[in-house]
Length: 116
Image (cartoon, rainbow, N blue to C red; front, side, top):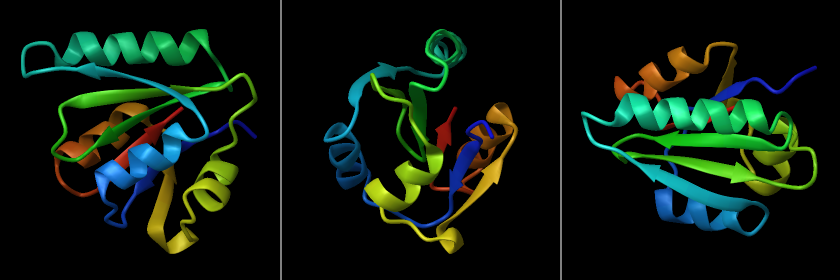
């Protein structure tokens, strides 16, 4: 089964989340403002499509950045959630919709979205 987008419902300190992920994955970020958000989003989608199974994006509430993570190894959403971040099933939900996941964060109905 392919990785689905992960909608994080549990609040997590953004700095701690990023530092934890940087221990396991290479990271770069795309900073945007109201005018450049769609361009940054398109760049993130291209990065994800160019690196299937080896990359994911992270979008957090109140942060004007898309974070791009990659690895030489295949990235498993289950391993990411439980082994690396230590979240339980009550902390997140899965979604097929990448755009919908971003909207939930924008509407403050989610803390973050992991995008595959």
